[in-house]
Every structure is written in structure tokens, then in C-alpha cells.
Image 1 (cartoon, rainbow, N blue to C red):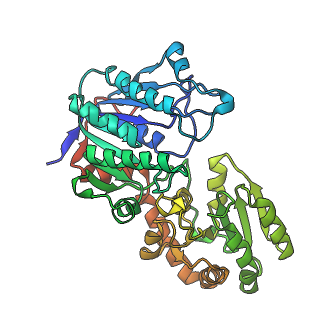
Image 2: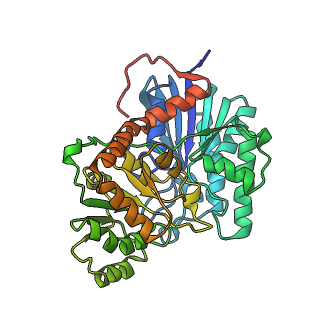
Image 3: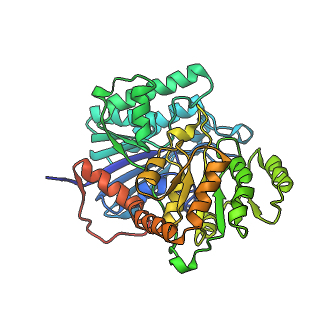
Length: 420
């Protein structure tokens, strides 16, 4: 019989609320975790451990929810914060040892804010998962989860740092009762590439990246523009926009009215713009540049024909192990996807007929696009599959079926879900 999930403790390295209590927008499971568990646990503690960014105060913050409503919001005092502060001119996407020490202390601090034990601890990334293991030994939590949101066997170029990262990953897998992997490829890589003995690991679960609708309404078939393609993402060697540019002249031979919207920026942008000009694609491609407003990104996909995600088969590509957000968002918008075998989600695209999986060649890309868009009956059957899959990819469904597989069911709150 499923156990009632009465209480949970979540520790995440993503910011959820700023100092005024307003939400910070970003792509991470932080918001969905808070939203889902605050509405389904009688007691919830959420610890935010911010990463340094220019102009931002990096300090631990803890929110405590009771029966779905925020009861207290606490932060470290300025003196404690200053001990671990990172100067604005040094802030960036790197590892800071003093922040690892801060995170250990902050987990202990947050654990005593609500002295009662919690049913479940969810630690996003290995260090926080190891903290959960320590809290379990102390009787503060009953079970702990290691939640992996960004993983690769080659995460760091520095070999010593990478080995430390991998050993912490292995230790967290051994320590925690459950492991939430963004993709099935992570468990396979631990066993097949790193040769980890996983027989004593916690129980591993496939917990993909979910879709936040933000009011999105998937348009009907008759509102789809079969001449519009969309590419979203960074413009660099991994993401394959160069392949798209090279394939467009072939696509135009069969579909002369085809157009492409490119949303993104990156080091290869100037060269690709020049190459597009050489190929006579000046009127075919609209270069939107970097778009920070997520709703504008979603709007650009709604009503388009296809999302292009032809990742390059680079040996050390992190896309081989991550759950690619832009594929999940395309599916959430009802948009069929053309991708390669690089991202693990290609298995769903192929097996559930959500688009096409191609070799990394301009010819293969052109044939996939023209094959689908020249046959409306085949295209709209694929689109129907995508629309059906979009509902399964909502965060609440992902977390719901994961907790059910772990033997949990939501608690019955004293009040209706409160606004967070």
C-alpha cells in the first residue's frame, strides 16, 4: 500500500525567490519541485543555494510551507553571507570550494528550522544528496533522493576536478535510496563508460525534464504553417545549425516557400549568417538573436511545422546524457521534432513517432523535412502523436508517476493549494 507523503525537504542550487520574495525565472526543476511538493505535503522545507551571478547577493534561503501555504522565509544574515561571498567580477559558471562549504552548513541550518523529521529529502546534485544521507543517519529524514539535473562523464576539463565530481556522484548513488536521472543514458553511462558497480546503488528512476505551459494553448491543425521551421538554442558546434543552413537549399527545391526562424546566439553566428548569404538564403532565414522571454520562445514554436534539433555526434557532447529542454518544449507546443541519435530523447521521437531521427548530414535533414511536409496526412499523424505526448510531459505528471513508483501518495492538505 502506498505511503502518504506528509513532509519533504528539498535542497537545490537554483534560486527560486529573490530577496523580495519574487520568483526568479530560469530553466531548472526548482520551480516545479516547489510547486508540486508544496501542494502535496503537509510540511515542506525548501533550501535555495544560489550560484554567484554579477550583481546578485549569493546567500542561502529557506522557505517553510505548511498545508500548502508559505509560513516562513528565512535567509542567512549578512555577516555569514560575506564569509562565502564571490565578488561580482569573479562570478560565473564555475566551481567555488567555499560555496561547497557554505552548502554543507546551510543544509544543517535548514534542517533545524523545522525540527521534526521529514519523510523525504530531495537533493539536487551530488553534494546536496550526500547531505541528505547524513540527515538520514541523524534521523532527520526517512528516505533521500539524489536528483541529477546536469550530468556528464566529462563535465570538467580539469581531470582531477572531474574525478572528484565522478566520485561524489558514485558516493551519492550509494548513499541515497532513490536516484532521479534526467535520462536513461545516465545510468547506462555509469555502468558502461565509467564501469561503476551499480548493484548497491539506490533505485534509479527516469525523471525527464518537464514542460511548464505558461498559458500555452496548442493550435489546431488548420492553424499550422507548413512552410515554417524553427531552430531554438545556442549557435555553436554542438547544436547543428550549420547542418540546417546547408540543408535549406535542398529543402527549397521541393518546398520553395519554406522559411526558418532562428532564436539564439553563439560563437558561430557570424559565420553562419555569411554562409546563408552565400547560399541565397537572406529572405529565407529570420535571425531573432538571443531571446530571454520564454513566452516569446514558446509563441515562436506554436503553429510552426517542425522544430529542428540536429545535434552533432561529438564524442564528448553533454547532449548525449542530458534531457534536451528544447525538444521537451517543442513537444509541449505540439511541434514535431527532427533530431539525431545524440540526445537520449531521440528514442521517444523514434519509437513514438514524434518526428524523425536522422543521420548528421544535410541530405538526411532535407529528406526528413521534405518527406514530412510534402505528405500532409503523414505529417498530421505525427503531430497528433506529439499533441498526445505533450500532456504526459507536464511536471506534475512526471513527479506524480515517479513518487507512485517509489511507493508514495500525496498527503491530504488541510487547505486548498495556496499561491506560492
